[in-house]
Image 1 (cartoon, rainbow, N blue to C red):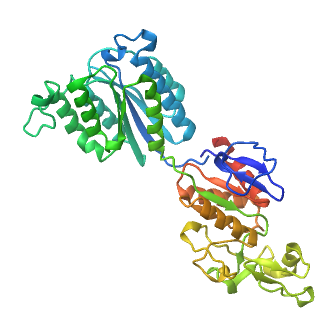
Image 2 (image 1 turned 60 degrees about the vertical axis):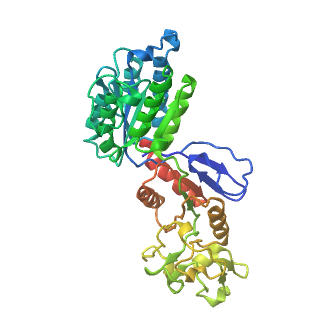
Image 3 (image 1 turned 30 degrees about the horizontal axis):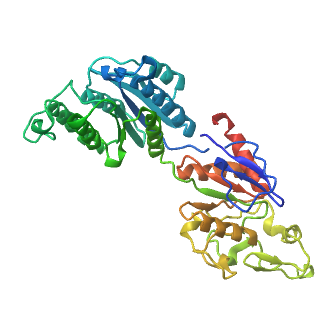
Length: 427
């Protein structure tokens, strides 16, 4: 697991924001001090690079050839992928007259970099064999996400051919290379439903009918037409690879988890989480000598008492030996905003914790980020912080996402810090 985040000092609270995003009101004198990411989904990716003779480029100099552009883009692909996720393995396959597995599935960045730097242009173009090699690598993978990224600068001219009546490409339209292209298509069709197939047409030297066939073939063998990237300008190759990384990693906005401060979570005497079983905060003080306390939307009216006085007045009800319960973490976007002042009585209402300020924060986050999941992490603040941090980890793991943003108040920042410390070896 990998974690990232930043700690900010605010006038009235401390917030930790994972992934370097600021998710609440304006910050005064905010100084980021450390960076946190949570990574869980496994991915296996086979990177297929065309190293045929045409990648030498002809009129390009050896230091400015398509091959060198491709190597630079492949190196950046590896670096950016590993920077964004710790649970992705990459394999490297080259295609020329035949295909070669230069590096099996690995998280070893130096090993991949050495293999990429050793690539050179030679031989023909056997896309069919390269696809079969990629398939054989991924066939034994148990990763939930399996992808092939294939970059070629030319048409298939080696390997299997197909000239049946149902051939995908007619020689009358595309010439002799249509039979090789049809064989590639037949190989790719079943793979498109098993893997996420991305293709890049680096067509720096094709024109007319050859360019038309090249584009059509790589569009057809991609698992979705939008997974085909057309690159004529060598300077755009690296950009195309970067877009593919984002697609593979599914780089959507991460969930936001609010971690309240001490006494900021509601505690219940029994599972059910109704207002009549709520122990903290109380609806009325048990000791009349301290004066009456009523809650309007969890905002206390206390006749001068602060929360600590209220908490102490509860006595045995909150002693450590008593088992109390918290409401499970739910996506607040799926629940109803409640302005009635009695949201504790409605199980379909959002969780706002024990303080009215958390209602404002939760509702504003849901409004500001409608496309993101928003969670309120309630916890038993009587427990050891290490125990709470482990429970936070369990909740984050259950989300099966790569990143989360943590918005923490007061003791919630200590919980997040402990969570970070308990996972530091995997950062």
